[in-house]
Each structure stands twice: as structure tokens, then as C-alpha cells.
Length: 437
Image (cartoon, rainbow, N blue to C red; front, side, top):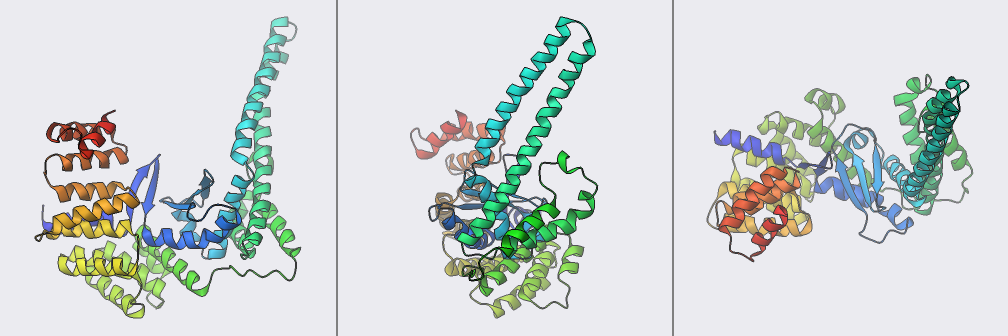
């Protein structure tokens, strides 16, 4: 296998993103995206009384127009939502709605309601069985049995529609408490109505678990019209945050969409930084590395303090086989940002490939530091490369990698191999044992 092909495979694994599967979902780790979204959501977290630093943003690689909150502090946002929502105000409205579910205790209420409906269904079914056992018209008991599940379903649908209305209302109040722009709700629902309005016009509103978008749009407009005229959204996204959000959207579109769609969304006539970013990434993905490098250098000349432009340059130089230049670009990226485990992992990978004296030791150090901040499968994979075949620690790192991606068979295989060559009671030996148990 040629070096160019090897680099191509590594970059597919790495790119700017670290992508892995967790709980049947594709999770994307990207420092830039996570930081921009975390900053945009921070006022909502404060307004929801979530302690500073506790709210975590996770990016799910999926075309779905969706987001959700788990445990009150973990926000999951789909790439389909980010690439389609053009306004950070609208994104804040979506997250406010999801936090509204959390503040309303809807998950617990849903569980209680489901238990109640199951009990009611069982009682109705028992009545049906009783009527059939009593004789007379057997169709009467059969009808009760057949209708019991339908009654529960309709009741649950009505319940979830009510919860969605409450979450809209609580989310809007949360936006106001956070001093954000409540028109973000209007922007979201107008976009949703444009996407699904024709379909919803043919749907029975009693057969779905959300109110119709037209109804939700009307409700938020009515609530917003009642806001005191003295209200000022003093925490609304700044011009800098809006520009950063545009760059994040361009990055996602550049990496995840087809070359044709990137060209449509960001034609050559568009000279904005967002367009340059999307086109450079798309060209890198297509193997047009020289043009991708030119576009990235243009971005750096526009904003030499943006660490993520240097990150992209590091990716491109790596694919070109320019290891020294790639290391320099990643080091500059890390110099301009803090606590960036994904970028540290990328640099560690290049160091293992360059393999100058001291490179592997430095790569091991960087991987260990990255893992302390955010354990990621790719970091363990790079760590295994950095260890090479060093007394079982490479096998332990591979075991951790396979464990994180859900391949238990491979994880146990490498954990057993690690324990055969590691000294007992060393950290890696003990961690291998944890995987085996």
C-alpha cells in the first residue's frame, strides 16, 4: 500500500472531525463546532440554572432536522439541523425548546403517563375478556379488546402534543430570561412550515405527536406580540458569533455534503470566508489538494488568529506528505487555542507518521493529555500507533479503541494479548482486565 493511499485512509478517519459510533448514533467530535455551539447556548444554560461548564454539546452525524437534551446537561444536535438552520437565533430557539422539555420534567411525566396508559389498557382488555367469557354477543368483547390499544395510542399522542406546546412556551420564556432574541422561534417555525407545510395540510392533526407547525407558529407569534416593548435581547449573538456560526455551517457542509451541493451553496462568485472554507474542505475531500491549500492560505491571510484554519492547513499538508509543514500548522493551531484534544490527536498522528527522533514519545504524551480531557476512539488508535509494539501497551490501546466503538470481540482479543505481555498491576494491565470483565 503506497504512502499516499495510507495518508488518504488516515485522513478519512481524521479529517477535521473525529467520527465514531455510540449508542447506534454517529458522533462527530470537532473542537470548532462544539465551542461555537457551547458559547451560543451558554446564556440558555445560565437562565436554566445549569452550573457553569456543566452543559455539554454533542454533534450527531445525521441529516435529520433534530436536537434533544438528555439528563438536563447534555445537548445533542444533528448536523442536518446545523446545515439547514442559517441563524444562530433560530438554533438557540431549538435548544430552548428542548431545555423546556427538561425544565417541564417531561421525560418523567412521559414514563408515568405510559405506565398509566398500560394499566388502563390492561383493565379495558380484562373487561373485553370478561365480556367474551360471559357469553352473549362475542363481538362486543372482541371490539373492546381491539379498541384498547387505539385508545392508549390516541391518549399518548394527545399527551405529547400538549407537552410540545408547553415546551414551546417554556422555551420562549427561557429565551426571554436569557435576554436572547425570541424571533428565533418564528424563524425556526417558518422554516419548518416551508419544509413540511404541504405535507401537514394532508395530515390528521390528531394522528401525530406534535402540533401542526402552523399552530406552533401562530402560538409563538401571539406570545411574542405580548412581550413588553422595553425588552432588549442584550445577549443576542454578536456579529463575531454570527460569523463563527456561518463558518461552522460551511465546515459541516464542506465535509458532509456532495461537491455539487457545496458548489451550489457556495459558488465561486461568493468570496466570503464561509464560502472559501466550504470550498477548500470540499476540494480537499475530492483530492484537489493544491487548490484546497491555496484557499486555506487565503483564509489564513484574512484571519491569521483563527486556529481552525491552521487545523485545516495541517490536514492538507499531511495529505500532501509535507509532514514538517503539517506539524507546524497543527502547532500553530494549538498555540491559538486551548484544550483541543481533537487537534492534539491530529498532531500526534502526523508525528507517528513523520517518526523523527522523539516524535513517538511526544505523540504518546499528546494522546495521554487528550484522553484526560476527552476520551475518543481515534486517540486510542493513534496511541497504539505511537507505542508500536512496545510491551503490550499498543495492544491495550487497541483494546480501548475497539471497546469504544462497540466491537467487544476485538476489544477482548487485544485485552488478552495485552495482559500476556504486560507486567501485572501496571495501569494498562488493570485497564485491560476491566475490558475483559
